[in-house]
Image (cartoon, one colour):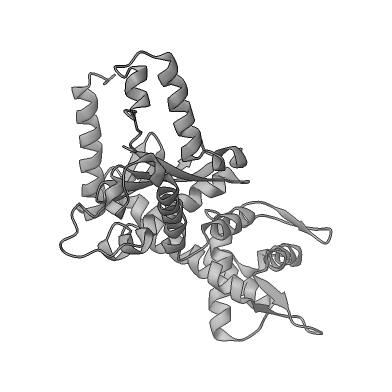
Length: 329
């Protein structure tokens, strides 16, 4: 398919035109054509696309949404001149902007340069498609006659590639998604099964909080020290937490990579991965999710809060829209 597309030349397009001119009526007689009076083709619009098919479409969509989020400045003159390889000054006509348009649940990124634009979107949920559409060839000091198509192709395809080069992503969103999902499911390592570390589980939250405390108090801890901290956080008497229960907790922390056992000892150390995930788990739950939900779902929240007022306005606006559209039950 790519070879077929690459073979679409100005000569082939012109041959197609001549074929139809021989079949369709037009004002030029045979004598006119012999005298050199012929139709010519002008390029009013040319589109050049790059379609990158993804082997994991859902991951690709998450990636594209993060790309949009972190590249909203692509329409600035400084970025546009990198994409189109053209100098942009105060006298350069046209609007320079970045637009994000959502159709259904599919967002698309639009970048304008004079009469031309680049559109990037997640095509049919399976591919990242980048399209450069040139509506005036003179934006690039190129004539409109069909013979200028090769030069125009270089401009369009180069713009697609430069956009991908200019776009930046501060993090690999796939890594975060994979890590979180792995923690939500049980796993088996070397024949040993470990239970999941689910985000909303009270025991998991207490377990990770205990790890954070122990990582500050000492470089390594014993099972007894973890048992005492965990019992306090759960409101239990340490005596009811048996050896088997603690072995269960230590095993799942170790197999999930949160702790490691020091050689030839009965002490454990919190890993860098464990420290970072434990901080994120506990701080997000305690400082963001729990107080935020209490404000927006409580029938009688403790005083008027900004978050609650914004949610109330959003709810009222949606309900009003439903009434206006006669969609209310």
